[in-house]
Image (tube, rainbow, N blue to C red):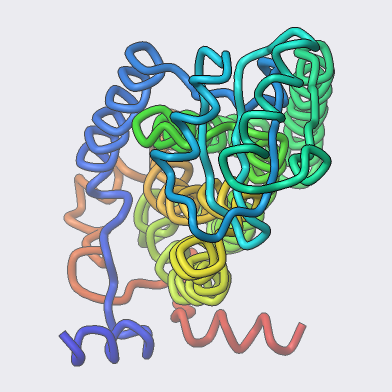
Length: 344
């Protein structure tokens, strides 16, 4: 295993990502089906910011979750979500009338030996959450349109389409994780969703830029097909993608698994889960969804179909199966292409 990782980092391993596109499509279809099933069966557990309700906060070091929950329910709340944070207890209930809010506040104070004012209350209306959701949708639409415009101008519309499909793929799977895990969806979660879109787009742009460079000179005398050239370009960005993901995901994992466990960082938990899942899925989609989809569309163009037919008839174009293949249409190797980019 260590030898494989070492060879991978030295660029001596050529993974046939594009050649296994049916495997990736099948895996993505499975993940999407599971995610959609979770959204249909469980739905998203919206936080009080979207549904409206009352939030009671107080400090009671000797209390436990069941004691806090029963106290709040016995005082008149119909539902209570209890969280222990580093600042004490945070109990979210359904929307309550003013007199019921006072009753819950008094009951909590009496049960845990506090003054009534020590139990702080925050009443949130559902209309505020609706405004947040509407702005998030508008931001998502603007973001998608900006992506399409940028990628179409910088590259081409097929790359823009492949990137959008990958982004939607990432969003649905991340939302599915929230549906099955029943983590609350809060405004911080929406920020996490928008953040992973930018991260996934960055990864896709890096890959597409390399593909554009190595396929620019493919012509009638090329020794490789578009599929083989794109796969080699993908392998040359593989280590960069993996390193970027690893460096970014370590602090996010620390927040998700350590910070929320030891310090009860509730808001950070909502954000970090979206980032943790989105970064992993975003890296996967850039390598195994966006690029194979782009190649599928490009190989239908007459120019690249002619290259594939000529190489098939002459028995050429086998470089992808035998290790590192050229990254340009001519005789330049991957290392030569890298050197050329350094000089630029």
